[in-house]
Image 1: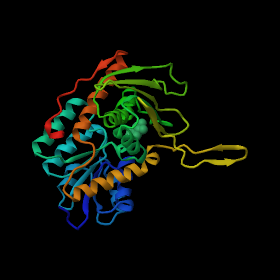
Image 2: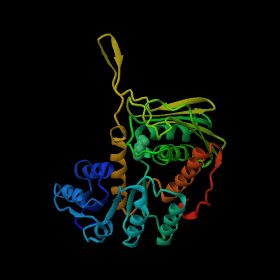
Image 3: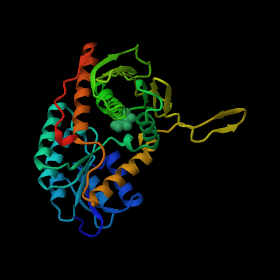
Image 4: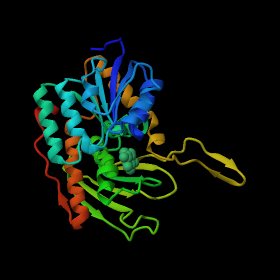
Amino acid sequence: MTTHGTLGVAVIGVGTMGADHVRRINDVISGARVAAVADIDGDRAKALAETIEGCAAYADPAAAMASPEVDAVLIASPGPAHEEALLTAFEHDLPVLCEKPLTPDAASALRVLEAEQRLGRRRVQLGFMRRFDAEYLRLKKVLDEGRLGRPLLLHCRHRNASVPPYFTDAMLINDSVVHEVDCTRWLLGQEITAVTVLRPAPSSDSPEHLGDPQLVIFETDGGALVDVEIFATCGFGYQVQTEAVCERGTARIGEGHGMLTCAAGRWGGEITRDYVERFEDAYDREVQGWVDATRRGEVIGPSVWDGYAAAAVCEAGVTAQTTGRRTTVELAERPAFYT
Ligand code: ISE
């Protein structure tokens, strides 16, 4: 499967996340090399490729995937470009790590789900990186062991210091809350059946077109309730916290007390700047896990089904956001292929 003993990876899309993955494959993880980079901005791809030995630059993802040097694909382009890139990867029968979201809506996600099933075996690991974060893994273990009893509630806080000027209300759900959608499904092993969105009077620091923060409530088919605070322009740093309230105890992650300092009559710690910093280790483990599994001929981690289910919940979330009404999630039946 590999041309030179290491996995030749084509990275599609080299904006913030894609460029970070290129660095990771080059400098941090083992067993893979960046064989190609592709970006709609051909000059950006070229400039990056010039810094990596044996790396070719393309403006067209399909041309990168057709290269004999390429054994696997990491898709980090914007969500609307994912369907085409995934279908092209399937044509070349290439293993894929696809950044979230799978695609921007449930209908296109369903098309990818059907296309992967036609291949007869899983090809895609979806980039919900929190599943590789040490704290989330610890919480998952505690919940699965059942020591605290059945989980009744999850309280989630998702705060970004700031977001780009083009960020919209819908992106609060599709780009940010989508992680809580995946974590809820994964941590509880339950599907989300309905979404309600409540809005306080917006922060005066929130851009005019954004109603920030918002409170998103999930109901699950196991009878749990989940509240998510999404505050995308909190200003003070990047904070992601989850507390599970169970029958016989609670478990909380995301306090971020890595180091406490005491000086000048005060004690305190630091808050991470952004998700690239907060989830750096999770991204490393995610990409290393993908490379290792691919070299063994296996597929691990979140699947296309998880991407489709998240898209269906987000669609209901955006409807709930715009109508102000509780909205039920329309979910297709889970194919046996994904069990
Ligand atoms: C971004 O796309 C991410 O995936 C981050 O994890 C999330 O915290 C942020 O809100 C999104 O914009």
